[in-house]
Image (cartoon, rainbow, N blue to C red; front, side):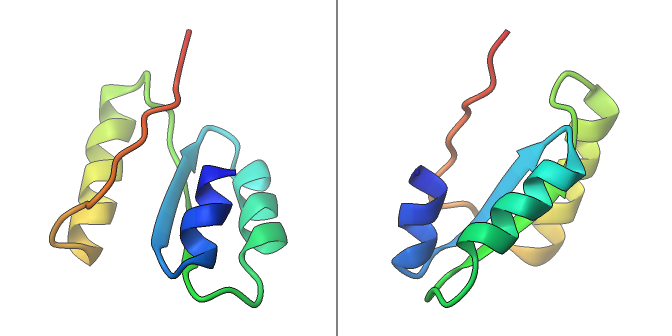
Length: 74
């Protein structure tokens, strides 16, 4: 819901998860005909290598993040 609300109101939202197919489904389902953008990135936040790669991918596109929501849990 948060992703959709931010993107509908014009935000570029990066969503991160372990399963690329699920991320793509979310981006396709909620990313059509909206002012913003939903960008899926596959990564496992329990892996230091994946976290480093995630940082690299986002920092190459953005100067900063305005909001970070960590909804990961174990």
